[in-house]
Length: 241
Image 1: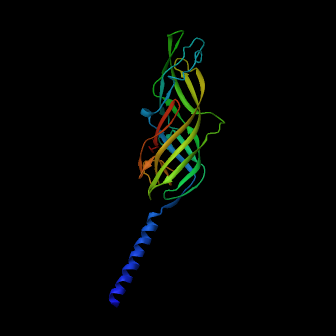
Image 2: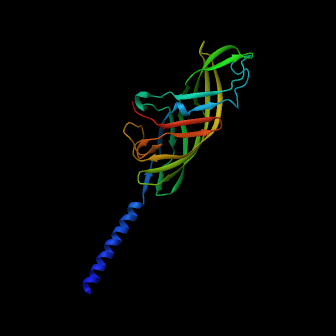
Image 3: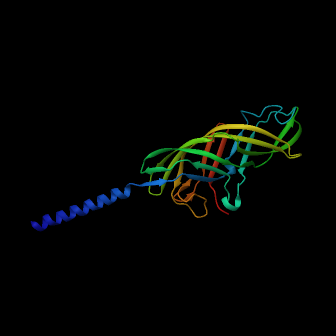
């Protein structure tokens, strides 16, 4: 009888130890420090749509026709030597203490954008006459607040997902190929993204701040879409050269 009771005590303690270890293991908590998210733009999924909200008549020159159409964009890396393919940087502005299945809201800022058109657009005059080729460059408007927010959830020991709401006050600069004349068009849009994966670890070719890999799943690069009215922007983690 004593042997049965003793065995029951031992089994009970072992079970309790196993359950305690499982609870500790199942509770993931970590600090994500403030820092940059480095992105490269995916051209096949990135464009500005001027088919509905068109560029008005006389914008490019007196007599220029309205421009209706899409401008497909690609990244123009800001510093290939140190930042590889990076053409866009979003900055996490605060440290984030996060644990399993917890949602945290944290400020996010758009600090660098460097995009160019994949192909030139054709601008015509006086009802389709005198076609001209113009390239486009997209950057941030100077001296403008570019602050949004990210809502982040940790779902496993490796990472989780986040969503963003990011105002983007952009400047589209058009450059005429024939003489390098320029025209500047302010363009503002509220960009949103949801279910963007993130992880603590990253493939060594990816450029991260060492603690947080945006648009990564278990350390592997994934593409994510930031979109708003007339603008779709596909990005993935930037890569080193």
